[in-house]
Image (cartoon, rainbow, N blue to C red; front, side):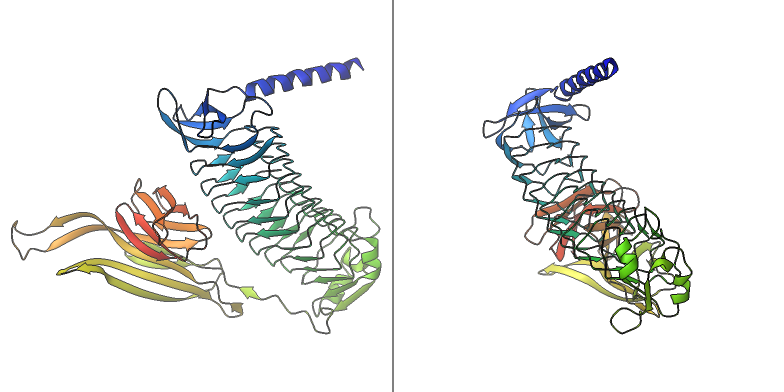
Length: 505
């Protein structure tokens, strides 16, 4: 008992120390509405992060300014710091400015009264348990600038009813939407490659989910206890289904397992009283059998469901551990027809330009390319003057026998003026004018554009057709990615340095 009491005292002391350290601040400034906001200097004092001054520091509506002027200068607000709004139960609404690029760990932890938050297109990361138990949130828009959603980011947000995860996100962190019991709809973007452990655990209101064909792994207990789930689509990209991934999804009556799957964890479909299991796996591997306490499928499934397998494989299934324990195994799809191999689709190609040569690449081995190139030399003119702008608009898709054609990739290749020079004798009207130019290739992909060939340090800005800035960055060595805020825009204007070109996304 003494040991336990000492341990608890030490823990309390540590918590006190952590809280005091977390809520130290450098300056406090009133915003335009008269609300005091606390800040820390970051990046050697050149920028600011929002912080707090203890629990319940903020209440009501808070509008965070894009920049703050305080005594010795003006600085941009770029970060919502660790625990900035920690346990501010009276907070109802927050507006985050376009200058902010990250929402830190525990930023809105236990803000139970928060009903509205605006996340701008500048934010690229949402930290660990950032919105933990924000039970008042009913909807949240994750912008297509975000590339990572931290572990437990929306844990316990039971008021959330729908979530769209944009194509910019590549991974959904563990427990990201754990116990979001009100969630009925989730759209997962087609760049997500992994769904973390416990990502949607106990999302009991979720009725259906389509997993995009970018996902290769479904984590442990990812959809566990999703009792309302009646339909799930697992694509042919998934190779691994983790332990208890769909445990106690009692609403599921049928599941189709694609041929790409090479691992199914213990209890993956246990306590799911499935009526049919359609396996497209042509070379079955061992799974946990019904006599084992950690069996892959429930006893009812093993005893009562029909396992449908590809034509010519029934003997393999009857000889493979786990699968052979199904009481009913048939060749076919349960609809009177045989199971046919899933349609294979060529991967979308990428376009490259180097040393005067245009090239295409595709992840599908043996693919051929069908392309179309259009040029537009004259872009605009005025009176007797015509400005020449050599631009090529390129489109290409990949094809292979036995595969469906890929999506079409598009790119714009143009030459950006660097330094005009004259050859010949000065003053000679017939002298040839040479323009030094760098070839720049701009192609769309996912949530943004990729620019190759621009000199490092060159500013790159993207505008919609109304002139609104929707993305900006600085060229780096090699390829440069710029996220584009307005996903719906089909045509944008890309300005590389001082040169502009229209690009179709």
